[in-house]
Image 1 (cartoon, helix red, strand yellow):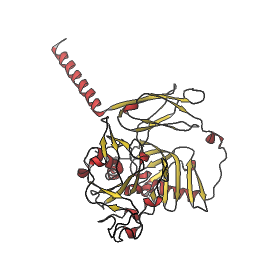
Image 2 (spheres, rainbow, N blue to C red):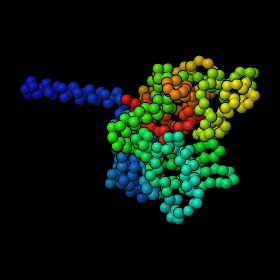
Image 3 (cartoon, rainbow, N blue to C red):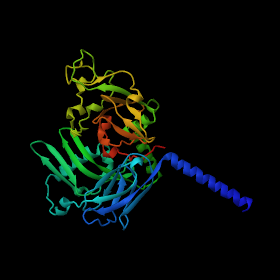
Image 4 (spheres, helix red, strand yellow):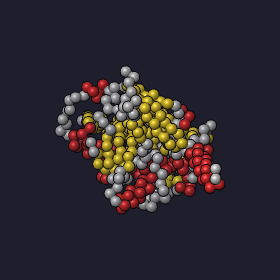
Length: 399
C-alpha cells in the first residue's frame, strides 16, 4: 500500500471511530419489530408506526416488519395504527429494547358503524371543538378532514364530547407542521376541557424563504418557556440560566392566619376562561377546582377567607428536592412534594407562571425532557392554556 493510500485509510478510519464515539455519546437506539393481526397472526403491511409527539415515523413492510433507526435514547410511546384496527401503544426506552411483535385487534365498533347520523348542530359543535382543542393559535390551523368528527351534546349537563373515526389531520401554518392526531377522548363543559390522544408530526414545505424564517421564529417563541423547555432545563440543571424560577406551593385547606397567598403575584394566566383538567388518575381524584384560581384571591385576600388554598413559599426549590439520579445515565427520577410554582422570566411581553403537580408518587424523565408517563403530572396556569396548535414535536431543538 502506498503512503498516499495509507494516509487516506488512516483518515477514513479516524473519522469512522469519531462517528462511532459520537453516536455512542448521543445514545442512539434502533427500534424494530413486526405488526400482525391478533386473530390470524398474519402480517399487516402498510401500518403506520411512529413515536408519539415526534416526527419519527415509518410504515410496516409487506412482511409486517418495521424499523426506526438513529433514535436518540429516551422515553417514548411507540404507536402502531392501521385502518379497521384499534391502535396499540408500547413504552420504549434503552432499557427495554427488543424486537417488538405488536398484535392489533380489529375495531368492531368502527367496522359496524355504517350509518352516518346527520346532526343539525354539527357546525356549532365543531367550532367549539376547534376553539378548545386547537387553542388561541388555532386561527392559523386547518382541519383537513373535519367530517371524521362526531359530536354528542347533553343538554342537561351541558357536556360536549367528540370522537373521530380516523386521525385528525391538522395543517398548522403558524409552526409549519402537519399533525396526525389520533383522538381517544374529548370532553368540554363549563370552562373545563379534557382531551387525550397521540400525535405524529410532519414537516410542511414552506412557500418561500420568508415563510420558513417566520416558522423558525414562531417555533422558538412556542418552545421557550414551555413545559418541555422547563424539563430539559431541569435535567441539565440550567433553570436559572434559562430563565426559570421554581418555588414550592402548598395546596391546603388549613387556615394560617392572615398570610397572603401567592405573594408578589404578577401573572394573569389564571384569568383564562378555560383550562385543562384531569378527573382521575390511578385511583386518585383530582378536583377540577384545583385547575382554576379565582382572580380576587390572587393578591389581596388573606388566606382562608375565600378558596382557602395555595401558599407560596419564598426561595428556589433545590434540584435534589425535584430530581434524583438513577442507575441509568439517560433517566432521572421526578418526584416532589406539594406543587411547583414555575415562573419564566425571559418572555418579553410578560412573566409566564405555571403550576406543576404530581398525580403519582414518581415518574422518570430522560435527558431530552421526555416523561416516561406524561399523565403522572398535571399542568396549570400558562402551560394549561397551551393546546394542540401550540405543540412542537419532542425532537424539536431550537437553533
